Image (cartoon, rainbow, N blue to C red):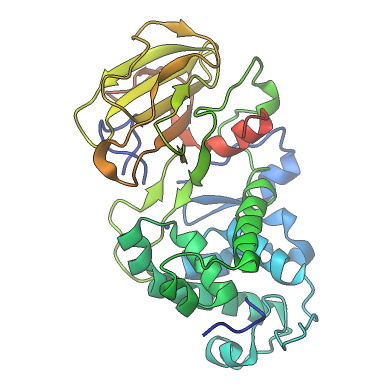
Length: 359
């Protein structure tokens, strides 16, 4: 937490028109030991083996209390103390989770701040409280609750509320970015999920929206612990947005277009393409009406223009919503799958795009 004082829909392939609200992480060449260390917490994949000293199960349990991905809590502990339970900051923050004395008095439940089990459990309780406090802001402003909670942990929730988002402090913004990246690349990415290995995905790859900024990641948008969350609150896929006029949406890989549709709903104009080997499906939604440049049945190469970034539904302004699935559906609009390929599952596109060097 901050050491100076300052006064978070169903998949397209299942139901037409609803865009992402079960995290399946895709990694490259995970070993059997890594696979055995992977657990599912809150629908998200977490590699407990990456956590030192056998503390992985403690992090998983705390994540269940917080309603936050365990990979995020692990990355947060690494950022706070580098897993040293005896570290104390110049302003008095102590332990693995770097609690200030006043905050520890509230969430430590009389435990020892230098005891890893006590500190990690308290981290879960405090993060749960931050989720509850900041969720109204996240919903009202369509911001990622996970990022807001991390900012609140670092700078204080009051600062997040005052600035109606991540405060403009260089330390806090770097803190949030570092934790989100570490959670993805270290504590979750090495877990196998669908059998899709990045190293086995050959051929040229392209960014789905060249010149854009990554605006929203794949993962849960949790509701406060103890509340009923029918249907879940999960963001399948990832979002990109370009400055100025809408950017050109392109094929990320060589693929066959199976959907090219002007859909009259919140998903807008959207495209689905299946890799030529049938192992992956990519979908693009929120494209501008009338911007389609491909038709169903076309075979296109990576980098081929598909349409133009749009703002259909005005959910979060102009942006592209990009999803990936393992396998190839017979018809994504009906949710049917090819029995030879097995079940089509949503997967996080981020490690794939990073692994191919386009993100």
